[in-house]
Amino acid sequence: MKQTDTEFSLATRLTRLGRDHELQQGFVNMPVYRGSTVVFKTLADLEQGNARFTYGTLGTPTIEALENAWSEISGAAGTVISPSGLGALALALLTTLKSGDHLLMPDSVYRPTRRLCTNLVEKFGIEISYYDPLIGAGIAGLLRDNTSTIFLESPGSQTFEVQDVPAITAVAKARGIKTILDNTWATPLFFRAHEHGCDLSVEAGTKYLGGHSDLLMGLVSANAETWPQLRKTYDAMAMLPGAEDCFLALRGLRTMNLRVQEAQRRGLEMAQWMAEQPEVLTVLHPAFESCPGHEFWKRDFKGSTGLFSVILKPGYDKRQLAHMLDNLEIFGMGYSWGGFESLIIPFDCRDYRTATRWNPDGLALRLQIGLEDMDDLKRDLRAGLDRLGQ
Ligand SMILES: *Cc1c(COP(=O)(O)O)cnc(C)c1O
Image (tube, rainbow, N blue to C red; front, side):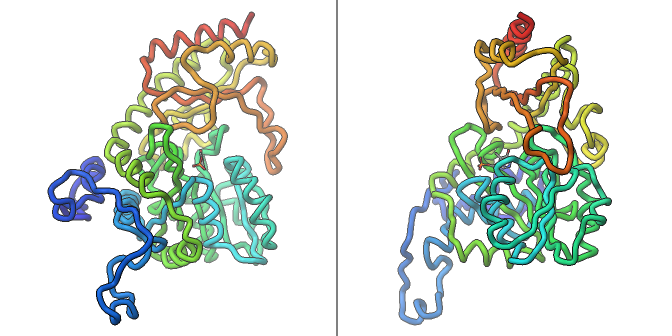
């Protein structure tokens, strides 16, 4: 089977990528290669590194199959894989930054990314400033002579501000500044990061690629211009994923299109239903007009997934919220998302935002819609909302 069959649609390619009929002796799936040492045939081969694979830290057929498949679906020149999404974000930042640089971060960024900046990136003498995620082309006004990287995350974590990615990457390109996008929510299926000008795109494979809450993984894909630097940084550190995890990710890839399409359908239905509940003030879902930056979602995205937030009407307190959440039967309270199970968490960004103010009129909840029966899910939430008023 060919590695590249670009004449087929993405859905078809997801079922074919990273498989080789001959190498697999006819079996449908790739075996798991575990390995450190690679043995060379001759002294000349050893001295010249003359082999397809030379050492475990530089790649195995299992890792390479996933890297190539991800590059194909992302429209990227190359991909490297880390043992977690956060690890992949660290790798992306280490690729484009050096001491003395200035980094721009959106105020809506995933909170562990902010911690990564404070606890690690700043240590290397890199200046960081946070910006309003809705700034668009106005980002030009924040650039300094030493700005080397603009980080984007669209939509933002928890609060779902959709960024004007093409406007920001255009400003960056004109000034020779690198852009890194956290594309986890949309995945390459719903947002084409490199086509919209991003140099590096990061996906927490932990979410929709894994799809079953049993995998931690991060993937960084690069455009042609940035790929050599990304690979060089990656090979210097050798923070590789485990072989079994790559196998799980390749398995996840086969059903990923089906799962994100279904996540889209369920997310939209539930967000609409939540918007109609009397306790709910507003819905923060990129496909809804009430979401900041909705016009950019409409213009640039090919779909939406199953994670969104709601703001409750004012007047409910912590005790009532606990009464609602503690007694839910199906929705679990937990971080992460993208699995088959529905989740809900409260959140509050007031304490740590610096460039923008987060001051909603009511309590905020983030929901991940899983694969349970929709009526069961609505009954669980309706009972929870009833408890909120008690
Ligand atoms: C979960 C998540 C990550 C990190 O992924 P892990 O594998 O849990 O480290 C990064 N970015 C976003 C937007 C996420 O939701």
